[in-house]
Structures are given as C-alpha cells and as structure tokens.
Length: 465
Ligand code: GAP
Image 1 (cartoon, rainbow, N blue to C red):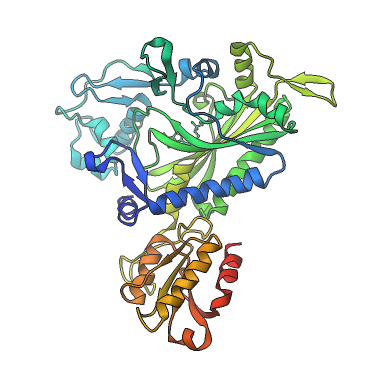
Image 2: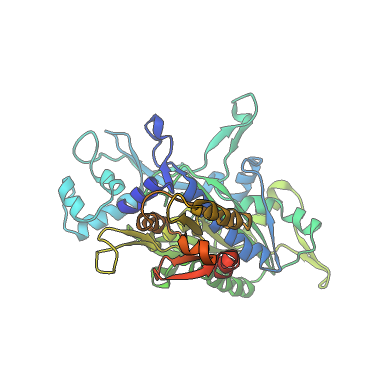
C-alpha cells in the first residue's frame, strides 16, 4: 500500500489535502492524473448505465436538502455508529473496529498490553495500532459505547440557531427519492426504471483510513431502480444488479480473481434493507467493500410520503391502479473503484521480466488510463518536434488525452509513461521525415510497430473502442 500511496503522490494521482498547512487528517486531493482517472470511471459508469440502458435516466440533485429529508429517510435517528472514547487520550473509535482488532490480537497470540513491535508483526495498520496503544501511554481506558450520528451538520443562512440546521447528504440516494414524482411526471419512464446520480457524499466517519478507502468526503455512483412492489421482482432485479455491478468492475479492468460477492447476514443489514450484497475487492489491507446492492423495498418512498404528506405513488395506466414501487439500489463508490483499479494495475518488476528491478508499470485498462497516448520526438531538432506536436494536436482535437514529452532518452520517456499507465507511446524519428511513419509502442507487450502518421488517430480510436 505504501508504494501505491507514494506513486500516487509523486506522479500526481492523489495528494494529502491541505498539505501546506500541515495536512488535514484523512482528507485527500486528486491531482491531474487522479482527477482524470476518477472522471474516466464516472464517465464509463454514466455511459454504461444512463446512456447505454433504455430505462435509466440521470439526475444531479442538491447536496444540502430540506432537513426533513433525513428525518424521513431515518438518517437522523439511525445513521449512527456505536463509539467508545478513551478517557485518557479522548480519541474515539468504532466499537466494531476495536473488536476486530482485539480478535486479530487474540488469534495472533498477542496480549492486551501489547507493544508496537508485536503489533507490527501481525500486519496491523497505523489505524489498528492506534486502537490498541494510547497516546497518553499504556492501553486505552474506554468509556461505555454510545451512538454517534455520522451526518455533518451545517447552518443555512445568516443565523446559526437550531432553526437553520441542515445536513450534508450522507448518500446521493435520497435526492433521487425526493425527485421520484418529478421524474415520472416530466419523462415517460415507468417501472422497471432507474434514476442514476453521481456526486459527493459526506460522513463524519469515526475511523477513516486506508488511504482513500474510507474518507469523510467521497463520491458515489448510485441508481435507485424502481420496480413493481413484490419480493419476487425485488429478488430478480437484485440478482440482475449484482451481476451488472460486477460486470462494471471487470470492464474497468479489475481482475476477476480479486472480486467477490458477499451477502450481508441479518445483523449487518442497514436499517432500510431486506437484502444486501457487497461487491468486494482484495485490497492490500484485506478484502473489503467496493460497492453494495440493496433491496430497499418501498421504505424510502413510504417514509417520504408520511413526512411530506404527499402522494408519491406511481399510477399504472395499464393496471388502472397505483402503487409505491419497490427499489433495488446498486451503490458504488468512485474513490474505492479508483483505489482498486490502481492496486490491481500496480506491477513492480523483480528484474526477471525484461524490466529493471523496481521499475513500476501501471497496467491500467485504456478506458480508465488518464493519458491514452504520449508522443515523443526522437531528438529536439531537425523538424521532429514540429511533427510530434502536430500529432498531439490531432489526437487532442479528437478528444484523446495526449502528452508531449521531449526530455531525456526515449527509454526514460517510456518508463515515465509506463509508471502512470499510458497504454501507447508514439515516437517520431528520422524515418518519419522520409516515409511519414512513426513508432507505436504498446505498454504491456512492449512491441513496436510502424504506423502511418495520418492513421494514428483512427488507430488509437479503434484500440479504445
Ligand atoms: N445509498 C446506499 C449507500 O450509501 P453505502 O454502502 O453506505 O450505501 C455505498 O455506500 C458505497 O459508497 C460504498 O460501497 C463505498 O464504495 C462508498 N462509500 C461509503 N462510505 C464511504 C467512505 N467513508 N469513504 C469512501 N467511500 C465510501
């Protein structure tokens, strides 16, 4: 993980946030390459589900909604984690996380009054270690557990009294439910159909950590898929969306052996769900959730009916009756997808495969690679830079992210591109002057072929398709 974090910082994927002010715990900024990577993931999701499917429409709702939203959705009362606080150092931890660490220690035969070295040997992360060792010395002295609401509170307008309290959304889903009636009235959709949204969500997580895996501000890609209200339909679409979610990750290039599906047991289910499965990924810190597919029944719409006093039912003209649809929800995280993609693509050489020991290649699927093509003139004179720049201009004009590089040896330029996952490099050399061909080099096979410079755009477009 440390190697991935270091590459992300060095090459401009992910920076620690507010770094010039000493940072801001567990907050991150996405740099030039990271922001493009995230955009590619979101664009692909939108293209696959909103543009690609007949029965899914898009939405972009407000982050701060009427606070009644969270009363109705149950988040005000139930979106809580049980916490313990250390009476000595006043750090707070989630009870279930402390329990996990204790189990790990018991399994590893490490005593409660552990020392740093013995925890390291168990492969514990910094976050896990901080649940064992108190910064005031010795072990923590934990309080009784108490519930802690995860929503960020804010004040809207000029007063900061209780009448102006509002919340930053903890999920994009509720904005969709609030607009259910608007969407059915303004479009011709009818169940089964989905409303899709991508956007930031905010949770005051007690134990954020593992780099961009769990942060307090993150992006979600969610679909609320509205269906006829019966358990059979719900099960059918639940299974459908589990498969579709998995397919999405595979299409982004994540290896199938690192993906798994895990159904929640009763105790684990969210307060709104009658069945949830997670798509999980084998991260360096363990197998963890990438996204979830939940059967939310008519819970949310019926709650919004109760609290708003409005009729939110769908009128089915063919049946001549109205009903509140059930909902199946595939909810995926953009940041976690980016982390899984980076982890999966990270390939450091041990020196036995033609690359130098320690050389890194990011084997990103071209769909998500931030830069698709790099163009190099062999040398900085004899008209080669001008030809290379013309190729760059043509590629950019076609919407293909392209990078021009003329510094250092061509070998070093290749390595710089391999490290950021650029699938193809084009080198303009003296033969280009004679026959209008250039070298096209493939990142993974490292093969090189000569192609006509007038065909570069169509060839790259073909490969991207
Ligand atoms: N609307 C349902 C919902 O929000 P969730 O399982 O709480 O379900 C869905 O969140 C996805 O959002 C997760 O699978 C994960 O990818 C992402 N996510 C949730 N909390 C996150 C956090 N603190 N940091 C990063 N991603 C998070």
